[in-house]
Image 1 (cartoon, helix red, strand yellow):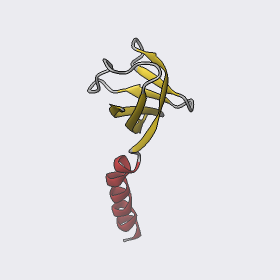
Image 2 (cartoon, helix red, strand yellow):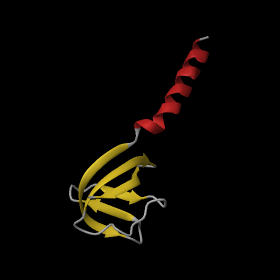
Image 3 (cartoon, helix red, strand yellow):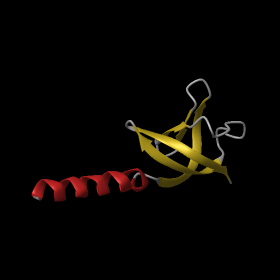
Image 4 (spheres, one colour):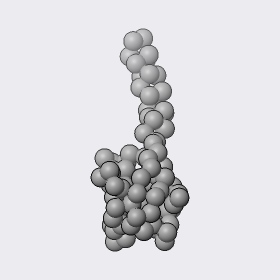
Length: 83
């Protein structure tokens, strides 16, 4: 019985875990690496830009608001809003 309860708790935690990792950050773009599809903000945070996000407007010095998720130890942007 205890194993069944622990199994249900584990399933519930795994179901909500992807949503808990989502976050937002604001800052100024310090560097843009289009070959690596990444940006570094002025506070040193490196963000990998997901394939679904356009990098056309991402320029050094631009103020941005980034929504991202942690995947495989990296911060991966799900959206980037240039202010």
